[in-house]
Image (cartoon, rainbow, N blue to C red; front, side, top):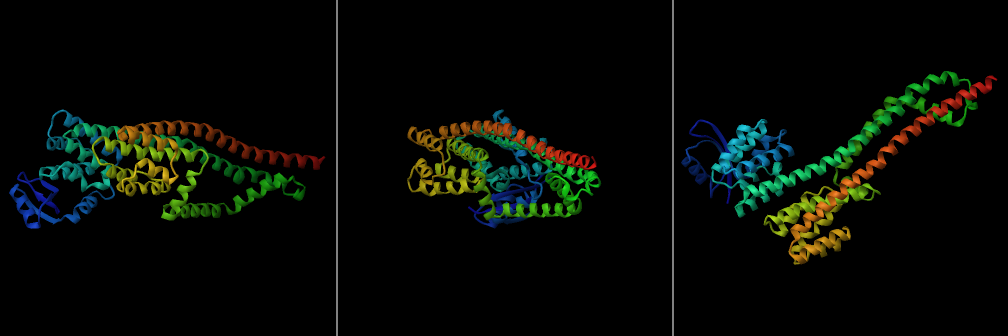
Length: 403
């Protein structure tokens, strides 16, 4: 049925924004006026999502905002409040203007007779297909508060895994930056202080000392040029990595890395399996669950391999067979999927697979950090030690000549 987006003023004089389903523009107008609303604007439904996006553009609620809203809404519904009353309470509790606007949109749509999942559809860029389908399954089963609690659990697990990976990379990144800055300062400011001592030595200086001095001269003379070149290279690589071809190539190379490749693979498959398992457990069809879960995968190589699943499942092929035919997935993924299909508990096996891979990711990240941190420290120490040894060798050479 066509839907329309409207702006109106209620009987209490408060402005209202929302969407409504109707057979035509005139019928939508009559329905809204019958509700006591004074229409200010009424547009065809094609502009609904665009209008919602425009109101939130540049300041859309983030993952944490969605998680907090979902958790609070689940508590209010479990306490027995009707949906419209719960949304009003959330509006009163909202601190950020964008959340207040979003909740007002949802309340207007719900008061207009639409289901919550239909109201969320206008804000799909904020909530995503997975969230909306979960809410729809809760409405169909009559257990919306329980489904929202599962959504909270899912979102918290996803956030915990993401935060674990990001937090794990912060210290090595800081260490790498400190190493580069330390070496640059040594070559750019410390080594030049000894050049006057070595300037009469010429070719008599040890080879290592000559290399270090020339490196210092390069940084001192062309430091800004090298910095600009590094910034330009970074900008080029950033744009290349954002292009479809560059992203595909980068993701393929990441999967081939010795330790990180396995972690990335299990992290992406974990997201896919958790989404499929959660959706299946709430009554969403397998084909729909797979299609939504594929969109949660970021790695282009893994995503391309998973794209064969919808067509294969639609043709009557088992999911485990389709996964095996790609040649991309490990025996654990294939076997756990097969066991789930044969036992009729694919949702539970997918969640178990996600849990196993989450544990692997966390232990893999810890193992990688245990290896990466000393490598960075030793690498920085080695380079600085080489610079110091080169200077000492030069000083000893000067003393030998003086003798």
